[in-house]
Image (tube, rainbow, N blue to C red; front, top):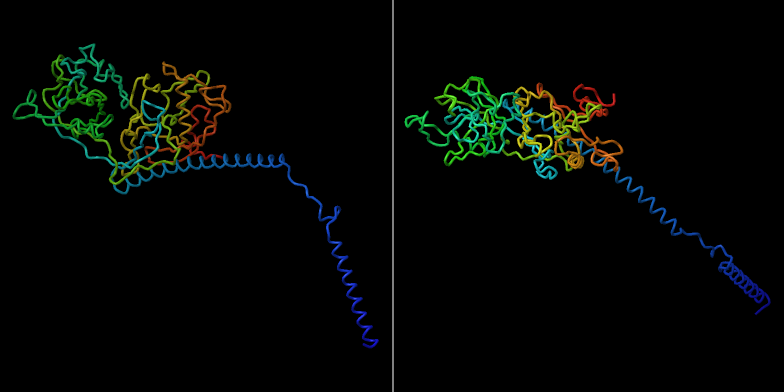
Length: 470
């Protein structure tokens, strides 16, 4: 090997050695040392910090859920009010289109357990249509003989009605005269027959014919408040009361099939005042039967938790006025609803003195206006709110109402409730009013006036046309 070859080899080995040293030095610099940045520990969250964050998240979630629930509840109430308005407008449109009366029956909530005497809220509705008038059978007019002992009531001071009551109160027609204080010749009773009757004033050649009133009553189409025309075509109409018909026994006629008139018959009796029979010959009649649900119709439910609170369909449901001497009178509840929807009961049954009828019907004529006895109301207000508020009312009013029937507890304020004036605040939920103008058939939806604490102002938006917020 010559000298030049040896020199090149020596240079390569030297270069290789320098590279190995460089690599070794570089690697040594990369090894971690106690003070190297690679061994620095980052700070972590403490347990207390984590708990604080979790608590903040829980509070935010609770507030958010509560806000969402309030919004949803409010939306449901407004949706329920729109549904009531739309359903009423639908009945009105059906009446105009079909050229026949059509209407809505408001169905009392069967799940209302707060009122054993009868529900005070509505949770569903159904379309209804009238039935043909009924004029079958033979009828005679009589003086009142409530206990059917053959002695007229006017001459029998101990007489009572079959239901145990001794008075007669009409919720349909304001009339100071009643059968129990009537004169000797007052006529209040229509007697029908459910079989061939041949005793006077009938005979074998001219027997009485069955009216089938008891069957109509059992079917729910002959009821309190129906109008009867005597005789047909005379335009002399009377509202009827079915308290005697309820106890009729068609098998033997004892008690007989009878209807009470809500106002005295316009012609006085012409027979002896000691007899029950008022006239010696039968009469003809025509009675309007109650509407029935339309064929193939099912009740429409309001949104869950939303009801029409009948007791709060009132200018003063809590009896707060006059403010200087509040009446606290429960009889004011529901005073913006038709009287035909209320059945009188003793205050021992309900402090208001009435329960709501299972037949709360609102009928529209082919011209679009409200027809029937309900038309006389002029303006009807439906208070649409939350079921929980109706439940709270029932609890508070029950606690506050003494045996006299007068409500004496304080009204709700932001810091108290009726049953517990020192208790926690109770915030009432959303409420909307659906109003029906009976003479025109117009239907509107409005909020409760914010100054509802002033007498007569609760329905101002509905009655004056004023728009909320202006």
